[in-house]
Image 1: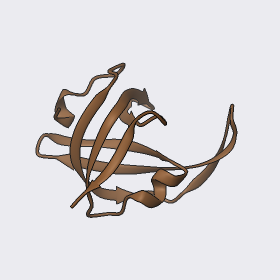
Image 2: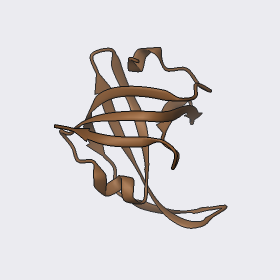
Image 3: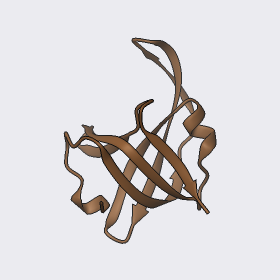
Length: 95
């Protein structure tokens, strides 16, 4: 799937993209307690989108990595689409 094809509410999204930016880690209060979160900007030849990174996912990706996302879902936050990867999903760095 290409980034340009993403729409709010999509489930079980799989895509490959390059990480072009990772924000500073911040701590937020969730229903599960305080959790670390960061946003990565990823791109492919069709566009860019924000990828939400939680806890160990933050340290798993770096700027310049090509990644594969599987089992993700798309939400809209502050009028911007973002890809979320639940525990059942996967983010892998491609060599």
